[in-house]
Length: 261
Ligand code: SF4
Ligand code: SF4
Image 1 (spheres, rainbow, N blue to C red):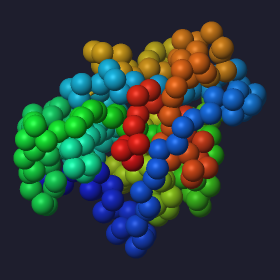
Image 2 (cartoon, rainbow, N blue to C red; image 1 turned 90 degrees about the vertical axis):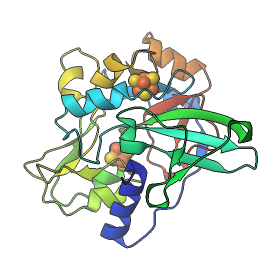
Image 3 (cartoon, rainbow, N blue to C red; image 1 turned 45 degrees about the vertical axis):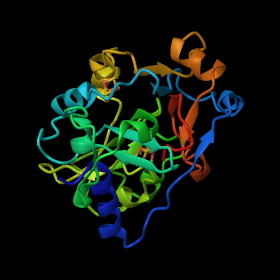
């Protein structure tokens, strides 16, 4: 079965005829964030992923699919977990079978059409899991390219999609450098994570945060200096993905390494 990663890549290639460049991981500067903290709303939702705590169980992916009506067996998901295996020869192997909905049940790497790759334990330098989701970018290219305003940003920073306005042109799918967007198999509109906006706007946590048994996923309000997530972001070493694209991602990671794309 095709992996989430290769599905996203193929979607981009089919729709755009271009390859999205692989991104580098950049160190995040909390001082820049402090400068950006002013705004009309008292709330700016951000997300914190601690890769040290993720065990790749996939409970978050399962819970998200059920909560957000993503067909359980469809090969698309609003969030997914990637496994990184770095071997002693310096090669980086990445997979995410079924978005890791069922966790990682095989010790072999799922290479999609290329089959399974067996790696001996003695050849492994390091291995870890990285949950991915929409970064709710502060400068979201997906919003800028939508010709009908069907994707937009709320005052508390979450990027939403109005299914009834989406015309299915695919521009936002091509514009997102993180490959998080896809077309909903039933509604045929652009789809992606929205931090479970229907839950957080009622004081609840996103379902993936609730489902994670190890606290690897957390949500916070960056405009509240006493929020525990804000304190971690402002005082500890955190990273964002592909900062060089200028999208100002608002999903922060603890424990990322340079291998992560
Ligand atoms: S991660 Fe992609 S879909 Fe999400 S806000 Fe950023 S550009 Fe848009
Ligand atoms: S539920 Fe938590 S530990 Fe399990 S895969 Fe998701 S983020 Fe990782």
